[in-house]
Image (cartoon, rainbow, N blue to C red; front, side):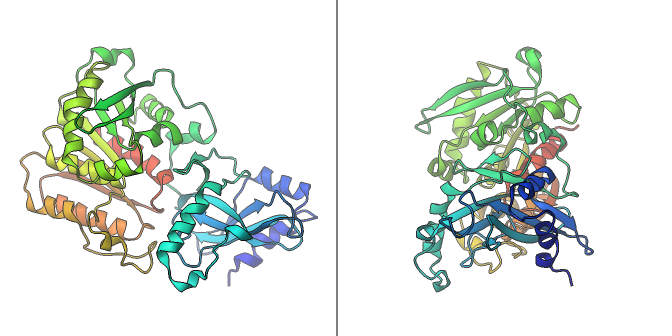
Length: 431
């Protein structure tokens, strides 16, 4: 029987003496963390290691280190995953078993005794658990032993990346992963002051068509929601440039729309007609002062994830004469019924076959005269989200639309979405 605790961990603890010494950690650093090896089953055993900067348990105030691995650990759990300390050393370790096709982001959350919950988590107070878990996020840390560039989370802390050997390739993101400068000089920033919405936000404009785009009226237009993340936390510009250069993407104009903050995002993206009226009446004329804006719906793409994936398809279904192509990743198609995301005992592997929310019903009941081209994607490890996307796909296929659906081995994770975003754009922009 395969036992990770007696496998890779023991191998490395005895790899170089003494365990936890400078030579030992240098060997880990040269190998690159996390450490992994293939099992007979075809899955991979992964060993996560974190070095306590305060030393061993005799000198350190760290009493526990929580593991947060997207789609592997459950951050809603009343029994969160914790690392173990190797006695007498500065080594904290945790092992997991994942499929060969999996990828995901992870972070460590070291806690002192005062930062641990002051009540019994097993009491079942989920609201209290959630608030406590959120309070820990600002102190989360990435993996300094991981050679890949980390991304920034919504809390402003680093999240490290793990790609298993058979995960779908993401060649356009190699520059980002290797830490190469990913902010081209030709990115333009402007402010969108919206009278309709009563707010102001940043917009990032980026064209892969070069100076010729200023004279071309039918360059594809891609609206990317949650634009601040794709502009700053995980800049997408070098990936777009790389994939355009190699011919996977045609030259296009990309508009990254800032979500402002969580409250504004939660108000504007879930099926809000006023937001899209403002895009058409205010944002498009603003963009036109910098670059020509195509009027061809087939060459106008709305792309988004989660709430953004819901919003993108809402825009296409309601204004197909303007938004003819949609890229929706892990769309929040449960909206507005929160009960659809609260009833699964297993939020990672659970399923809700046939489940659908308001927008799915709308797609079924409103036949359309104009077809959409739709790319849908969801992770096999994000619980009800993949069932909701599958149901939406079935609803769209009963109409006149051209739909492509794909699942990936991962969770509700931008590390997964970034590859699907490029693949989806390639399919949507192909003849």
